[in-house]
Length: 356
Image (tube, rainbow, N blue to C red; front, top):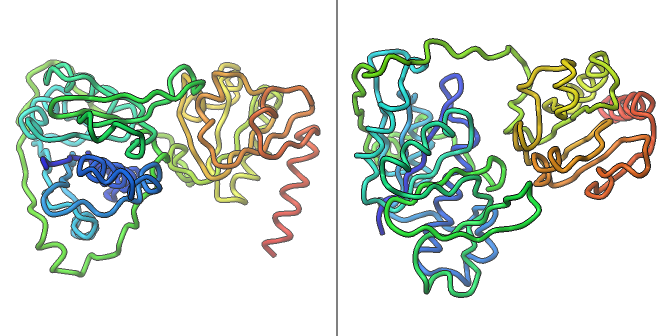
């Protein structure tokens, strides 16, 4: 079959967790296209399908990778790695340059997958327009086990539109199929520590494609990010979020204490952000970030459909709200009807005792 590409994004010189989730998604697509519907049925949603064979898996990155990261990709079945190199800094690379390079690079191949995020939301629609192909956005699964999928051809994917109120099965024909994948919806393949394994590094073809200078007047000169010692919200396994029930910015002090104790990320509902209690980068919901942690603790959050759209894929939801009729309890696995300023300190006390 043709090559399946993934965009391997980095953070502080290391591959982001989302890259390994994309490799799981690519493997699931490879198995589905090979007709392994029956065997792959139990594997596809969590991305545990067998490793794609030979030269079917490739990656593209926006900056050179260290040997350790190259070795990790090679060990996971990537046989071609292309760096879109530029004579400017990474933050100055123009999206139209990237689209032009990607258009030539993936033309005629099976698919290009990218993890949903701000930069990708700009690049992928432009690429779809340039390639004359539809874009499947916010993919949450590959339905290899559904009847007729293999027979009808194309690449099938699952989405959750309308704020997650329905599951949509879509099929894209032609080449390449372009898709963005929701973070945390595919189980990340293990990131092997293979930096010193020369055989793995030698098995991958590494290329560089120069981008040259931007032809447009607009370039991104600088990307400002808030300094934080916590895990990235979109990649966190545990998220502790606060809402209108905090009644003020001081409420995020207790939220942060619980998050630090659990090694979690801090999140917020839109009302808390709109009130200026916390920055917009923490917002979870339809107009914020989409998260899918193992554990989501909602403190003082009513559970509006807009917020639920951003966290409904969480594996376990714990809700703390003094209103027993709050909508959040309808989707919570565990509910605590109490004042959060009483319940959260008790949780902190009990968890601290268990850790001592």
